[in-house]
Image (cartoon, rainbow, N blue to C red; front, side):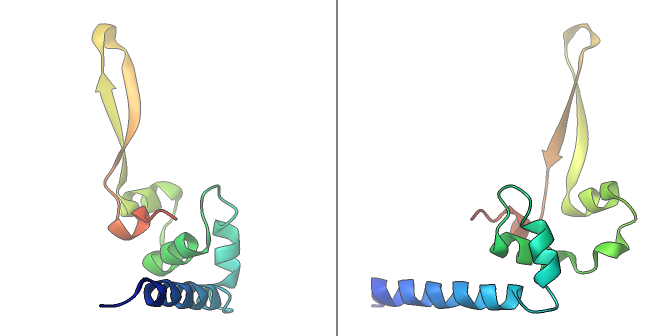
Length: 98
């Protein structure tokens, strides 16, 4: 059976490797920009960058939102009142919480 200490050390090594990858020239600037968003840290930023690839392939934010599975929705209430919401059907990788 693998010990708790072994697992903790392995996790620390993986976290260190993720930090190394994020600081590489290829990802550094994008990770820095995404990390400015509240709740986005290195792991999430790097995951978004790797999963998305080239952000320039999306003409506008709505196209990127559609790619992520974020779709606008409408719900009608009594007296024709409208409620607007976001239905979230996003990629599993982008749902990781730090």
